[in-house]
Length: 186
Image 1 (cartoon, one colour):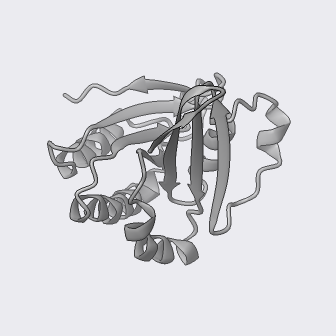
Image 2: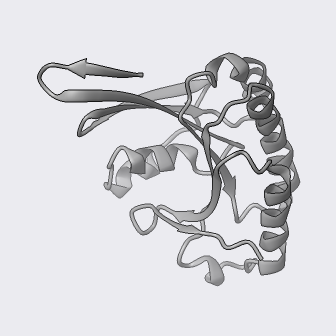
């Protein structure tokens, strides 16, 4: 996928898919990837409908980010069409709202469907799982984070992914102008 551009040398194109359940923070992550730092931009976000595509030019690379809506009405369609759309993907970011304990099982189930498509297509894409909304004030919430629940979630995800797929699981937050930290598997 590399082209020679006479004015700029080697020019590469990359495609990233950002996918997960509704309200898990995918569009906020995309804003951060675009370099948006104005907090008002985050307050005015509306749920994504279908797929939003963004192009970012950085140095000698054009990155196309596909932000998939997470509402139930769209997820079935996304799974049906992902076979075709994943062909030239370099990276898939699966986002889980770490504060939404009640939907961990649904998030893992949806991730399993996506992972099956990756495996069936022999895609050797880079996979990142973002445990999102790992915000600095997480401990101050009325429902404190249950480390055991989170660890069980990480273990489930880790067991699902075959050895030949390169992946990382990271804590993420936009409150520090998007931050990610690797999760160590115990």
